[in-house]
Length: 474
Ligand code: ADQ
Image: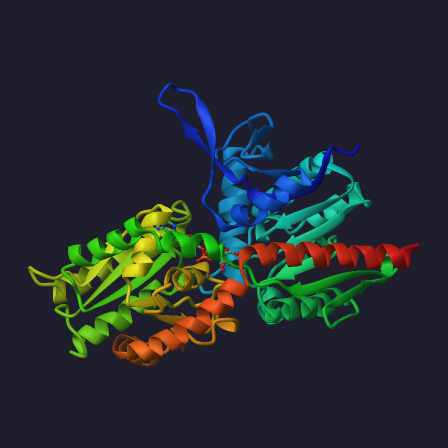
């Protein structure tokens, strides 16, 4: 039976967080993520519903309206959180799709939970979607949903977007359930990726793992009457205008100046902002910084590094290990190089509000994005959007999706520590003129390709492709 909503977004998490009020009641507040910002206007316009997990194990709350969006919570038991979310999503797929930086675990019980939970999401989406509605499924936790949905509701127009990289076939081939994942994704009309290289990897996996005729981003399914699935890139972005405006506020500029003062007015402030994740190359960055101090190419009298590391996936083993490694390294660098007056690395294991993040970006002379592999990396774009003063240098890993777009950054290979050190020094010494020239070009790119454009272009491409497919079938 069809539901009421013409647009249904399906994502692992709902766009709101549960808040406990002082009087003991609970309410829901919009979570700060970019996806929510991107989709909010379309959701309001199209009368949308959002299917997702509320973030705590146990029975789900009843569907409710929040911030103009119908929220439909999915329940996960504590065991499912462990097996579907921490296990198969973050212990198998996440490392596999990020160049196996750490070894993925392959456990049949995790896979079974993944299938079961994907069915539950598909079921809920099928109940909410109106006849002929558009359903947009998000990210690697839900790769089986497109197929499960199509089985239940062949009338729907189904899109899927992968926020993380799609690996080369030689790596993807390790996955014991590789054919099932491909079949799951091919339930969609349109499968979107961050980079053209990801879309190519996927098309190639369709050929190699499933023997399907696939080229130029089109995969033909003879078993389904020649239905064609399109695979293409749609690089995600940020709400440029909102961040640009925020960074121009007087209180944010004042806070940026205060941050620099509190740090002892270093000549150069270097900044890293990441979820504490092994894909982000935090240890490589710290090593380069430590060696620059060891070599005497800079010293704590002139430079300070602020590393903001948001707590993340704290129950997954490799994340516990990474946190220890980062904290030991920071301790060693400070033990060796800090003085009574100057700390070398300011390590902040917290989350911050938007204002504070904008102030940090404004305060930083050099932004270090040294990911070993990253679907896009929004932090790089956020730094650019904050720098209306056309100052500051972005040092950017070539292994991020952002590197495809932000050509005026200083590109680095984070594995090449000498190259990384040279880039940091070059960034510190760059003339204001060159900073401005590069920053202007970077800002133009992000302003023209913001998150609103990302969402609109994906949905237009989906509509167009679905229309063509329907035309062929009739
Ligand atoms: P992430 O791996 O989470 O996203 P990223 O794209 O950098 O990586 O987004 C992180 C977001 O969290 C940014 O908006 C950043 O400002 C914010 N953030 C980080 N630390 C914070 C802190 N301490 N306090 C407050 N906010 C903080 C995944 C993929 C990426 C892809 C995005 C979107 O791994 O490659 O770009 O999804 O598709």
